[in-house]
Amino acid sequence: MSTAASQPSGGPAPRSLIQRLSTLLYTRSRLLLALLLGPPLIWLGLIYLGSLFALLIQSFFYLDGFTGLVVRRFTLATYAQLFTWSNFDIFARTTSMAAAVTVASAILAFPLAYYMARHASPRLKAFLYLAVIMPLWSSYLIRVYSWRLILAKEGILNWVFAELHLSWALDWLLQVPGLEGPSLSYSPVGMFLVFVYVWLPYMILPIQAALERVPRSLLEASGDLGARPGATFRHVTLPLAFPGLVAGSIFTFSLTLGDYIIPSVIGNSSYFIGAVVLSHQGTSGNIPLAAAITVVPIVIMAIYLIIARKLGAFDAL
Amino acid sequence: MRSNARPSDRPPLGLALAALAALLFLHIPFGIILLYTFTTEDAAFTFPPPGLTLQWFGAAWNRLIGTTGSYAACWERGLFPGLYQLFFNLRCQTELWKALGLSLRVASIATAVALVLGTMASAAVYRSQFFGRETVSFLLVLPIALPGIVTGIALRSAMGLMDLPFSFWTIVVGHATFCIVVVYNNVLARFRRTGRSLIEASMDLGANGFQTFRYVVLPTLATALLAGGMLAFALSFDEVIVTTFTAGQQSTLPIWILSQLTRPRDRPVTNVVAVFVVAIMAIPILLAHRLTQESGGTQATGE
Image (cartoon, rainbow over the protein chains, first blue to last red):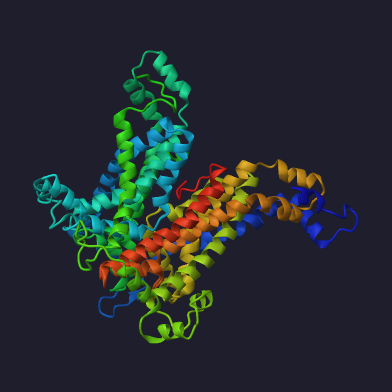
């Protein structure tokens, strides 16, 4: 600060170019705003929105099956290819996985978020906060990979079940239709566990933030008015924390919807949206079809975001 | 039990156990990888490990510098594989080195772009009310709020339309796009915390806009920029979903790791690399946390 006070020199005497420019920017604050906002907006507008627009355009082109080249002519034929039973299966599988992961993350995240917001001392809270964000920022691929070790047939989870004489329960689970697989690491159950593990911090943080904002006086008022702890939780805490939960769910849902790594590293090779998109654009070079498929999760997310906005999630972000 | 719990109140046992369970769920997998770097078994993941060994650390080192071929020769000639080789991609490099070097170069440039654009956007949003301000923040979050494949295939579509070949720069552009928001969040939080009075005081004392920026704004932003930059670097360094669409045949470190996961050569080496990546990435994350802690900084990607 002392340097700040001592540096400016000269005063009003000779007005250099820099000073004139500075004055100009100060008096014309709109000009400064335009200069500040221009580059980021051009970058995001041109590159990002432009790309999304390109995606939309590509989805109306089609791949000539004979030459293997993209034909740049308007057609709805590519979208027509979406309406097959197997594609519908993929969309349903991905969306229901995303929904299941979201619900499970919310259930698992809530107690920890509640503990952090209500019971932890400031020091413990700082520690827990760090413990939640460390995995969030840590290598995603390696976090996924660690479950290869855990879920392997000869791995630790099977070992624990065997030690507890519960292997029969695991075997039973892996025979349930829709969840079946030779072992946990090749079944939808394993995939579900990994999704929950990877996205859980995204759920904890907004719930915790929402709970922090619930004024203590409201809880005291509820107690004074005769509500038992359970009733206070149901009628005061939960409704006020709900926008945070919805905010977290945007991430768990969206990230699951667009992931192709987890289904390819863990799980039976049943297709998810991300894997289909990747394979179409990669090996066959069918960018139009890949683009058309991607429009589906965009639409799903748009609907989700509209509902989330109605539920007040944007204020909790 | 009272209904209005204070921080010092004892939590119900069930709540404490559930919280502990979630915490363990988040952290035990790291311990498992660490354990498996010492296993003597190289084909399966038997638990408990049949024996313990340190040999995989050596094997990973050899994979990095190469046991045969030019790189080992370079090594013996005393050419330390320093930043120069890493950044300028000399011939004597193993696949792992090349991937590491590419990731570092991409992350550096993407972070630099994100720092400049993110700071400009946060300054604009902080200092003035303007029409469409909410839209700007929404636009900034969009690249990470939409599923990763959307961003990936969108960039790929644009490249297809413009007949742009895959290159180093296509990766950088993709990464910079979703890194901007991290810098933006950190810097905006710092702006809001420090308030305008310092800037006004500086102007009152006769400093012009540039001097104020240089001697007042920049010093108060410094740690936020450092934190945002490190987080952006970490985000770029680890990114794989968008990268697969924009990299073509080039292999960044995450893509190299992914190829090891799907067709493993020797698994314990992958474990060693994994442990080192996690350990090295922890440093910038912890530092960034330390730097933003006094501001109660919001560093979570989505917020």
